[in-house]
Image (cartoon, rainbow, N blue to C red; front, side, top):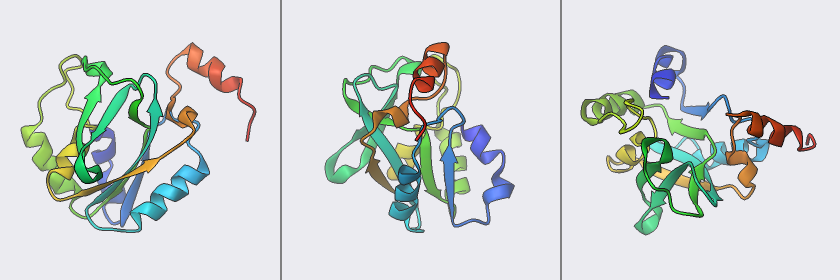
Length: 164
């Protein structure tokens, strides 16, 4: 995921903020997108993280005191995620200034995922929080926004929902 984002750095490096939406996230609402961009408000060193509470999160975001992001647990890396934990919706708004140097610093310390053998993007977010960045949580009430299309079952699910 980080390779996809930073591989096209030259295309977004002059922007104020970067809106990332994973390609499998087909149900992210216009309200979530506008809310995330509004919450970011061109603030420096800021990440807006839209999340939804899921009974079985795929990636669980753990927040501590004062709503500080302290960890990300990833089921794909063998981590146990708590029931009804906060899962991202595959959408992130990040300040551009300082993002690439922060990524380079993260890469110099990041370890490979236990299962995938990859350097994952999601742990970069608590890394940022620990290095002076603000991570703002945007609570999304429609948990369907957190579901991506990764299987035939997912496709059947989304085809059963009337278009908005």
